[in-house]
Image (cartoon, one colour):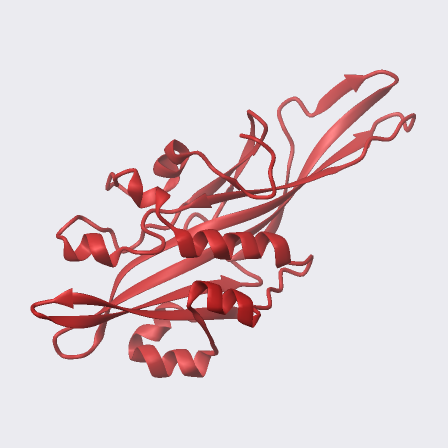
Length: 243
């Protein structure tokens, strides 16, 4: 995997790590234009505290609205409890789908957290955590800041209420690769890069659901694999894997 400002994790890894018994088609992991935009925004704008402020430009680009908890409860009714948690931010969108000669509403909520199970930091080291580059011996540490962003997708029922169809997610990791000189003889600059991995149907589980395809209600990734180049450093559990 190349170091870039935003690197998508391998599709095969995403399939293995989704934690679901259901096998989803390749396009389930590949088609996520809204989450692509949000993931890049998180990578570019999340500071050391994990706080993310959404400006008008990103909302217009994704066709989403920023909702506070009260507004979310008004839009979703009792189903809002699925999304609400401590120190969370909510981006809300509403789509319509054809059904039985009419249309049904399908709200989607992207949930960002700035603490607890949705935003956290971990330190990782490789099995070979020393590199010998004369005149210095370096130890390597990876400082990982993870942002697990959930998507809740609902569908309007015949009686006008909403039903949760699926919860998926994408995870962004900001990684700092730090070299520690064992003997104090030399310096080597740290490196920073970003990794992203997407769960299945993170932007649209409604289309396959209405087509009669098998969709699990919880499709969140259980962990995010951290790599450097072709080297696997380790894995950090995400919200589904931390409970």
